[in-house]
Amino acid sequence: MVESIHFPDIELYTGWGEPMRADIALRGLELISGAIPDGIEGALYRVGADRQYPSGRTDDIFIDGEGQMHMFRFKDNQVDYVVKWVETERYKRQKAARRGLFGRYRNRYTIDESVKDVHLGTANTTAMFHAGHLYSLKEDDLPYEIDPDTLETKGRVDFNGLISSETFTAHPKVDPITNELLAFGYQAKGDATKDFVFYVFDADRKIKTEIWFEMPYAACVHDFAITDEWVVVPFFPLITDLDVVKAGGPYYQWHPDEPVHVALVPRYGKAEDIRWFKGPTGSAGHMMNAYRDGTRIHLDICYYEGNCFPFFTTPSGETTEGVPPFLTRMTFDLASNDDGFTKQRLLNIPCEMPRTDDRYQGRPYRYGYVIARSMDGSSGMGKFDHQTGEIDIWRPGPGDSVQEAQFVPRTPDAPEGDGWLLCLVSRVSQNRSDLAILDAKNPSAGPVALLKLPIRVRATFHGTWVPEETLRSGQYRMSLGEVA
Ligand code: V55
Ligand code: FE
Image 1 (spheres, rainbow, N blue to C red):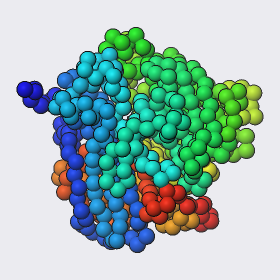
Image 2 (image 1 turned 90 degrees about the vertical axis):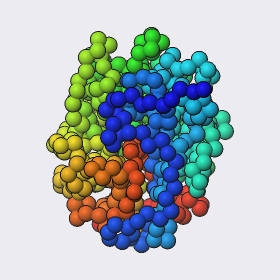
Image 3 (image 1 turned 45 degrees about the vertical axis):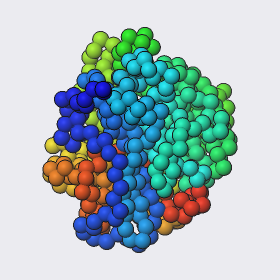
Image 4 (image 1 turned 45 degrees about the horizontal axis):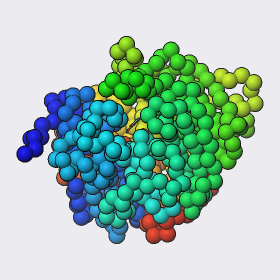
C-alpha cells in the first residue's frame, strides 16, 4: 500500500498554480486569429517546474519541483505542442515509490533515507541546444540530455567527462554566430562551496576556456552576461550556510550587510586576469545583456534594491517583501583604479525575464524584451528601446499574464529586432493558455497569430528557439543584420 496523494493547501498550488502533472501531446493547435507567418520553422523549447508528488511539506517554493520540457514544433503552417517530464534520477525514484521523496528545496538533509545516493537535480529551468544536442538544465546539477524530436530523456551528462564541476548553470549563452557555448558552475564542488568555474566550449563541444576561482561567499549565481572580451558574473548576498542546511533549514539566506561583488572574467584568459568590483547591496535573478564600450562594460539587469527572493529571509527571519525589479545599467570601467561601479535606472516600470535578439548577446544592441508588470497582478510583453528609452507593451487582457518571450529573427541575417516574439499567454479566467506570435517591432499592435491551448501551461521559466535548419545540421548559421 502507498499513501494517497494530497497537495498542501498553499497559494503555490491553488488556482493557476495547481499542479498539472501530465505528459501531453497536441497535434496541431487551433488557430484563433491571424496567420502563422511564413518562415517560422523550427522548435520553441521551454522548461518549467511542476510537481510529480507532494513533498510532504508546506514550505515548497516555485523554483522547486520536477522539470518538464515543453516543445512548440512549427512546421508546414501548423504548430504541435508536446510536454513531457524530464526523467531525472529524482523523477524516476519518486515514480517507483509513487510518492515524494526529496523534502525541502535543494536540501539533501531533508530527503528520504532511500534516496541518499541520488543526484537532486530537477532539470526545471531552461532548455539549451548546442552542437546538435538538446538539454534541460537546473543550476544545482549537471545537464540532462533530451531527444529533440520525442522529448525522451537520454540521461544526466557531463559532456564525456569534460565538465568536472558538480553543477551547471541554467543560464548558459549559446552564441548563434560563433556556435560557442559559454557557461559556468557555482558551488561547483558541492553544497556551500565557494568554487566557481567558467567554461567556453567551441562549436564541436571542445573546451576553449576553463577558469576556476573562488567566490567572495557561497552565493546563488543564477545568471551571468557576456561580452566579446569579458564575461560579467555578479555575486549577490543570497548565501548558503552549510550548518543551516544540515539542520533542515533554507538553502539560502539573505545578508543585506554584505556588498555586491562583480567579477569580470576574461572570455579567453586566465584566473589571474579576473577584475573585481564591488558596491552596495541589492540582488537580481536575470540579465538582459552586456557589451563592451572601449574600456567600459555595461551590464543591463533587472535589479532589485534589496532581496529578489522574499522567501529566503535573513538569518533572523526578516524578509523584504515586494521590492520591485527595475531595468538598470551597471557600468564597470576597466581603466579606472577604484573597484566601484555606477548604476543607472533605465525604465520606471517593474519588469523581469529580460531577453534580446540572441544574435546580439554580448554585442552592442538596441532592443530588449521584458515581462512588464501591472499593479493588478496581470502582465504584458514589452519591447524596450535603449535608443529612445521607451517601452511598447502588449497587454493580453484583464487578469491575463504573459510568460518570457522568445525572439525569432525573420531571416538568419535580418536586422536586429526584425522578427517575432513567441509568447505563452496565461488566460487565467479561462484556465487555459494561448501561444501568441507578436511582431517584435510592434508588440502593442497585438498578435499576428494567436494559437489556442485547450489546457493550462502552468508555468515555464526559460527556453530557446532552434530553427529547422539547426535541428538538422546541429549548428546555428546566423549573422548580424545590417543596421536598419
Ligand atoms: C532562480 C531560479 C531557480 C533556482 C534558483 O530566478 C534561482 C532565479 C528556476 O529555478 O533554482
Ligand atoms: Fe532564470
